[in-house]
Image 1 (spheres, helix red, strand yellow):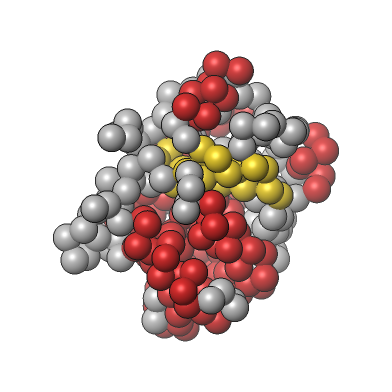
Image 2: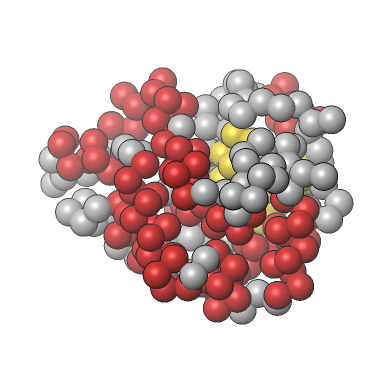
Length: 241
């Protein structure tokens, strides 16, 4: 039986979480130890890296873009313990601190269908024989969108998905002073603080759009070109026996 722990206490990463244990609308439960969401893994200690390997993580999907990779190399990028893939997701309005994060998430959902399709194809293939972890820099925006699509696909209620997104605030609390140092000079501290936040309302904006435009995550994933058989197989593996 998988270690049923929502937030993994690791050295060098702060926002590593198991997507298992969430109840779906029909009373099922998402499987523990199958899918993990995370922040940057560049500073992960060797002991913590081995902890992830022991949990059966065989695939790591890095959602960061090239300039981020150049500055902070993922500890799994040249590892034999897990297959490492980089699929860059970039917010279409990156650097836009005026519009709300929910609207920016919609931009990514609509503007990055091809890379999102690739992420889900990798997840569908990887979970046949092991567990998978996906991450970006802080594990909130790009990672949050992928996590939301996965949980919605499994049938988890929108309120629960928004709560999972909001857990990031507590996880990143030790890093907030460091993250604030990245504020561009032209951006006010107040605007940047909003950008760093993860109130559940951000995710509700995205989920409302997903419902109105596609019906659900399955409808969106089908529109991105993923084969229906892959979608159904991933959905079934996400649900506990």
